[in-house]
Image (tube, rainbow, N blue to C red):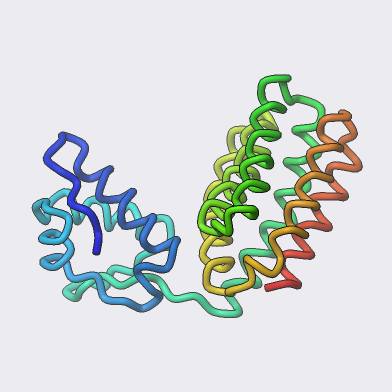
Length: 212
């Protein structure tokens, strides 16, 4: 069940966030039909803000809207994964290298806190939290690269990575290894070593792709 979201002026944004979270965490599954009538009733809103939310999700590639028919959660395929990781392996090492030379002390602290949260999530067997922090780590590296365009691309690509990781069922098995690799990336960034940060991030992305 999706939670009702009230009657605030930003209903469209709230609906977007609720539905997006449900898709990313596989509560709404690939190819699942998104009936406007049913969704509006479940969320406790009218169809107008719901349609706006679905259009935004469609733009992000999470929802497919067929004219004259119901919207549907976007499907995922092996070919989709190959495309995502081809882009990811080109962008993320570049961002890590840039972050190593531009990151501020408070931003380093933010990355450290994210990895501490991942470590705690493993101890609590909370892999939904672990995955959320995985997304935060990678998008933060993009943000701290001091390149807005690169940061935005990394946000978009990691939304899809999030879905692949959930659907793969490999999180619990590989969480410790992923965290170790994150720590290697962070250590290189902290040392201001752009070449090593780039190398470690490239290896991490390759490893994630292989594990999937």
